[in-house]
Length: 66
Figure 1 (cartoon, helix red, strand yellow):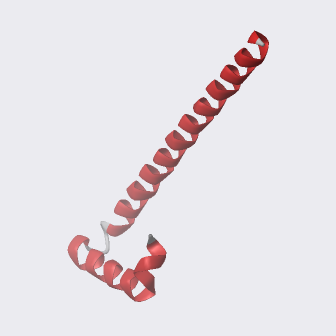
Figure 2: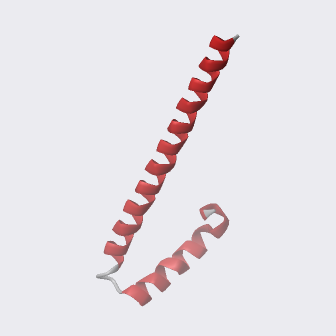
Figure 3: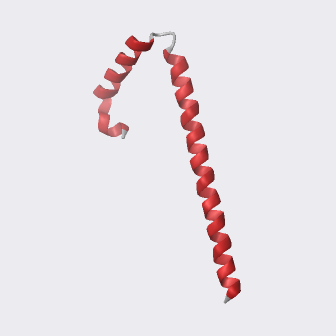
């Protein structure tokens, strides 16, 4: 998604964010955004791992039933 925006688009977004939020608030917003993305990725990874474990359990049950 970010690759579709391009460098000029990112620079424009940063300039607008700087104008809207100001230089003091921008680092706080960046930190909060980073933490949110990190938590989202962790949750998605955990769900994927749980799904994989359930699939392994089902596969083992099928093999025992044969």
